[in-house]
Length: 205
Figure 1: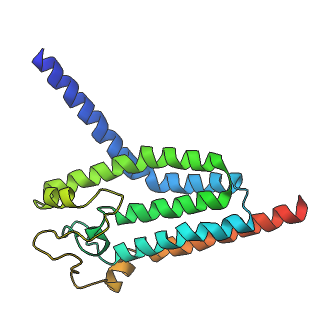
Figure 2: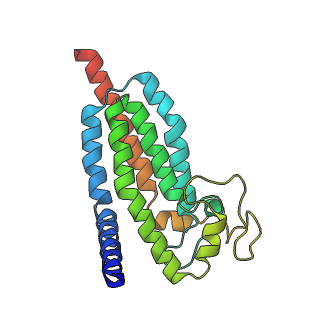
């Protein structure tokens, strides 16, 4: 009986890890597919476009700010925005996505967006955390102090660093290395496409 239970557990874990790998690989192409569907379904208005900036702009700022701190696979980043949330890049992406969902003025997009984030980003985050836990001994201590997504109100002190401490502060070099400016360019392109669609709809319908 114990062997049967162990086999079921191994099968369950194998399936979970398999989907995490798939989710990490398809998240970028799925983003392009969703963008196409988004532009097709969107029914924006000038007010919804303006209101969406309240989410999109902070999301872009947070992603850019986080990109200037993170040193992927080199060290566990616990300072800057990472002292408030373990995943500021994904949080920024969520804010941007919710902002564009508001701009689209279509509830179907919001539902699809929530489903995609649950199916793609949750396993991706779990997979990345498994990697960090395996390679950085201080990760568990960090995870106990800093929330996975929803940020805490004050900066956490991790691995002997005082709250709010910065490892050299924001690095423009890291920001450029991670090409985070692509998020800004992409967002501007989407706003332009939405504005053109709105102008077209107002002119011909």
